[in-house]
Length: 544
Ligand code: VG1
Ligand code: CO
Image (cartoon, rainbow, N blue to C red; front, side):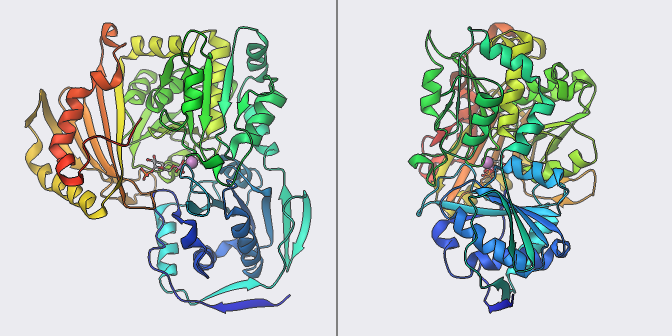
């Protein structure tokens, strides 16, 4: 089969953000746009030639088309074997699992994660390395540099291949294996958690739950694991059918976007447990009856109780949290006598620590939790972890978390997002804060005294690489913190994220409503950054 060498010219702005290249579908549909980026991967990741590559996505609009393009290009670029999920489907953690299990040289994940899908919405692509994790900045920078000078890409002139039947096909000189996207991942979960204990909990007659797949990729995974393998009642998985537009919803598992599920957990007859995942299956939200577990608390609780699950029975080696994530995990690490790392936002920064065996668990405030079992955050893994704990502790979600607060104190936490803000205004706001930084230490803001103020910079303890300007941190003597960042995953305007946290040791004050308890700090954060004056917004669009 003859390789086609197609002339092309560079596009501006193919720089991957927090998690890959994310743009509107319409941008990706421009002739050569996707091809240029994919060719830049093959041109820079030269060991893919002669190796095996995993390809799959979250099933959103344009997924199938993009996969056909990538398969042809992979074959034309000399990849020997391509593992693709049936229907072009793979959750992000499942891609990571398959890369590791079959020791492939990498993977291409098609997803814009929690961003909406459909012809007028978002699409995304990212490259994962042989460790199963999102490529580090050195790799994404190289790919980006290549997109700036690209002048040709390689492909084949072949008809679309059938992605819906399992089996092996030939594409040029390459072999394409269409795999069941669920089985390997479900087996991995079964090896980590006590499925018998969870099965008994489900059959106890006094436990009710729903998992909301939000019409995104986790539907088939959750049905197989929760309903088929663990015996949960049929219908436990709601919105289980993946749709190209996620049923018109916003596949982001939080209080704002998973309203239907949240409502089911409320009131006297509320469910005992509710959980949801995002577009590509790497995020999780955990709810108990009338109880929301913040992702930061979830990481801390999982770390404190990990030894109660089979996969982590020998204890954990260390913990990492992204910088804006609350310091609740640090308290657990101190108690356990293990290291706790603070990394920039984005899962790629956990990879080296996981590979080096320095950490076992890691997490982000943005509903991401994971461990060294793969190199991505993992939504269903977190849900099974919680179910395992509920089963062995025979306590409710609320009891487990309030117990945790009693032992370690409570880190009150909230994030306020201002979405679709004018880009210049948002950048102006961040510059304004950067100018203030040197004058802040020692200053009194409201009733808090600033103990440090900086623009977070990170040096990777394993390879010494550095990442600067990762978000403004303002720490107070009380232990409270305010963090400001601009999102690196959005596709329109800018999103300002304001992260707030304070520590409350007194159990008598642990039951306060979060927004009320945090009001003084919220006001300090708004005033210091001049949010209303600079963005015209007096309230955030999303509070998590
Ligand atoms: C957001 C989150 C970040 C997460 C990233 C990818 O990035 O804040 O914690 O790693 O999304 O998650 P940003 O730059 O918009 O704040 V996902 O589930 O979109 O892959
Ligand atoms: Co995601």
